[in-house]
Image 1: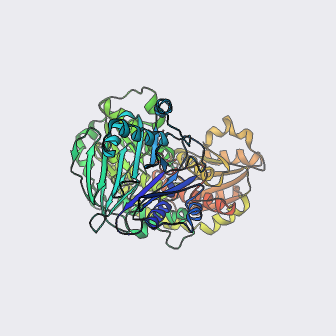
Image 2 (image 1 turned 135 degrees about the vertical axis):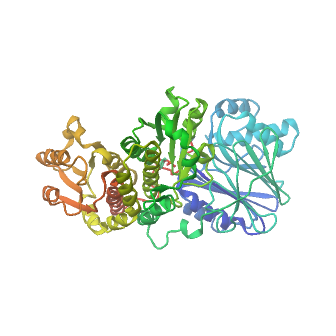
Length: 614
Ligand code: G6P
């Protein structure tokens, strides 16, 4: 949450910072600000609102600077307003900071600083940090670098910070603990970029360093150095970025979300490509082979995630139990970490995350590792914290996902979990050769089926038009499609602000049925394979109470088509793979309803894509 970007070099900093902030806006968008250093002056501009609002504030002012930084905020401490927007200044105004994360012990530090004569202009924890740094510098008569290091030793919490120093205009200081920070190394000497992720950097350089927790990066007189907060000098590891510019632009689509929905045939293909071969019956996944013994003997799987990733974990539960016969538990990372869970050294924890930075998932991994479990990460962002903390893992290769509501990351996660479950089943001998072969071949064909499911778009648009003003929605599914019902409801809530609930279809009669009347659209995910007859009964129960049925059915299923008020046909496939197909029209439905309601699809209110706070 919160996006940070900074630049030092021979180009104009302001356009680079603003463009970078627009790319990072998915991380938070309630207020924004920039600081630019020029001729020994520091110009600060900040405002409530989005980056475009910030541009209007800056308009006409002096933006000539080769050193600058900017921030787009998702409020934690202090409401979104001009004062609480970053950057924040130190007491003298010589230092400015931008921050992503939370300083947990800020209140105690603030009290001590107030007693020493400090005045604060905002309600944020961030302003306390920059005052603390200056206070230490003044008292100890030390360099700003050293003061930053000592201050970071006093704070508890998570941070990615960048600091500008007004009277040292050739210097940029950054540090991280728990929140991501990437340093880009420009092609010309002395040019550096710093950002929450690589998207603001990729058009200028492919050479980056991912800072590790507890590291401080300092650019001074054109040279970069890295040390730890314990004052140990580090040799930074330079990596090549794998993303390119087209992947992070809209490419002719009106929103990132719809672009990402349409990318799914490719993102699923990229996530499975080269990892299985149905003809030979072989899987090619390095981590599976390395951990073969562990996987053969593992007693229990614990799948953890948050939000949409948690829904992917639920699909994973059905997959792993069906194919591998290993008992599976699915946990919200946030609950798991705080409830003293029973974890054994022979458990395998699979941590699922698009961003690879979700604070609760990171903390849950730490806990699992402490208890001796093996951790396997299924993440999308290469080089992010979760893959680096995990013992092993598999990337999802969905490419950058920018729409805040997750779409292609979900289907990529489910694809990888399907692959993993089949590979583990093969190792453990819990699946017949024939069934394995069939499923592998069907998985290879899934990108084509998803392509066909996308052809429902026009029909979905018509349905969206009819139901765009509904106040509530119910989503029902069973078996493998129960998590799809949850995900469909979440998508609608997130971007259209319509109240929606997902339920296992049979549970409807234990509560939600009370809500059903002629005003209630009920989306039923009812592919032909699976618990089909029972779902038909559930449809009848809804109809008897005049609810409006929108059914997701297998192509050619005349029975449900007749019963439903509206239907959307998707191609047939094995029930275990059906979530990859049935989820497509639900994504489209939420997208079109949100657009028709005039909602900001890519940046829904109050949400952020990367949740780096608890
Ligand atoms: C936020 C996002 C969701 C995402 C969840 C977990 O809530 O808005 O789309 O599913 O975080 O994020 P992760 O990056 O761990 O998958």
